[in-house]
Amino acid sequence: MTKNYRQGQILKLIRTRQVHTQEELARELRGQGIETTQVTLSRDIREMGIVKTSDGYRELVRDTSGPSLDTVLKEFLLDVRIAQNLVVLKTFIGNANAIAVALDSEDWAEITGTVAGDDTILIVCWDDSRAKTVYERLTRYVNE
Image (cartoon, rainbow, N blue to C red; front, side, top):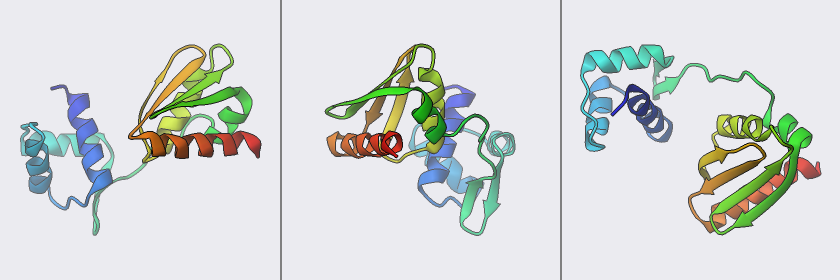
């Protein structure tokens, strides 16, 4: 298990439930098969810009550099297709990554993950109905 994977699981935990202590965080990670020490958790929390609030651990700041999703969709998106729980985006050559990065930074709950090529993005959703929701949201952006 890599540091990046562990930190990704920490983010997933604090985004989906209230975690108030490092002991609680370690217990949740252990439940996922990730053994870690309190020292490592402290270092991860500091490196990731996570702060402790009255509602539990939260991300202090998110990287918002780069153009907005609205901007890149209107500029580069050519087509949106849906196939069961997948949404496929076609872009101008060389622009798929820009849209995928902007989309990932939005952190839509319906999306499991994205994969970007040169001119195509594959969006994997949890199920067919969530894929339809993503499809509708994306088409609204370009129809505005």
